[in-house]
Image (tube, rainbow, N blue to C red; front, side, top):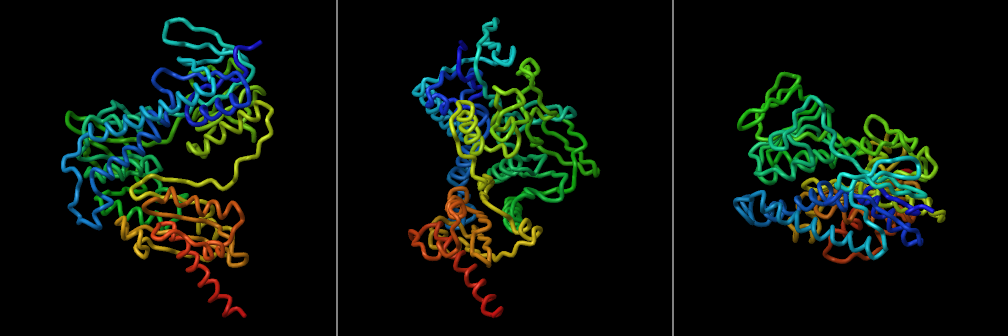
Length: 467
């Protein structure tokens, strides 16, 4: 007889959904989490705080209203860290309460502390009391998440030199900042601080940023960030960072030197598996702390599963939730359908980006014919109403069977309206469905009809000449 049928290590999106799914199937479930970290990195230092910070920045700076009220428009002239932190902490507290209530309602036992494996069926729990207790389980799900990777050569002090966790705890809004790494997290924070008036320099060793996105969309993002005085240094690497009393000196391998109040490293993520004593359970992790799993999220040890960021790509809160649910169902012997292959990507830069399906580059490389349909927000009444003159929606359409091959959105509400295209694609719909559908007016979703008509007209012109 085990203490729990299922023990979940970590309460982030994947851990929560795994615990609740198993509890709904009638299993005795325990969830291990550190004190004051319920909800994991997602709620406390990652996704939710950063997206809340973004909303606070957009509101307080009045940035999204400047097309309507002029380039000098601001809701608040002097924006302080406390202005930003107040909204962030409010949302964190509310979300933590929601999660705690959901777990309690489903009778999931919250075990406060950190866990490490004793063997494949038990863990030692350190509850900060100085003594460890042993808990046994039939099956376990590792949902330990990740932390920002910190290069050994960098002397982080959480004030002048910070990572993506530390940047939300800065005491003041820096006048200048160097962002090392032009990945998703780096570009999100670069755009937020640029909107606040910080002079941002982005250093990236690759020749372009966000290279998995549509190239036209990325060029649009670069244009808008340059308009916010962001400087890009592509093909460059940081050799060293020297801390001085009032600022930091960033030295690039090319010899360039950049002075900044703050340097933020966005050098990827590291799995939080080093404290789990995986070897005691017969498991191991790679050098980035990631655990290998099969199609059902089961590790090399039959009764132990792993889900979320700790298993690597795509490492999104949205996909992690599904992984947790599916792993719990499999662990409980419950039949489940696999996750749909169409998974949207959302990037919360300013302006935001979202897409689902293929890019033009991928279709060209695979010699797949396609036609492009574009709608620009400035042509939509809703675009004018919300003050977005730069947004766009792009549809990639197969000229043979008129199916949607990809949907790419840039601008206000991108991460919301992308799901319309995702649904049409998932149901095998064609561009004709979007043409024949009535959309509410005025809405940004109406962009689908405009883009669909654009693509259909281009296909018609080609077909007419081919006859």
